[in-house]
Length: 72
Image (tube, rainbow, N blue to C red; front, side, top):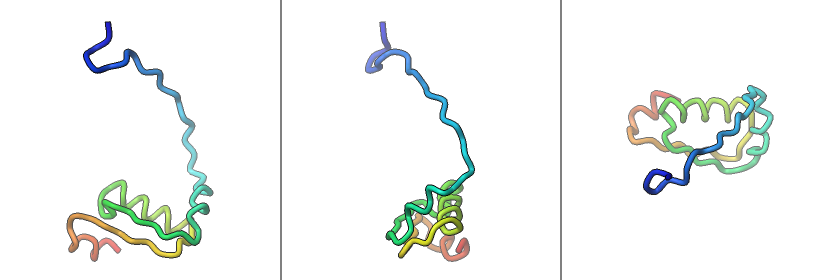
């Protein structure tokens, strides 16, 4: 019997981690929006994106506007 609302056990795939950020080049020339830009993950996304691609425009959003100006 599965838990209420569940579908039984999940089968998880093990994905290989790679620090090859060549996928970032697919963002070249695009307009990018990043929410949570000053958070832990958001700031890493911004940093990785800007180091490894050449987007047309990048719009950064966060809850604390003062943090945004100090993080850039």
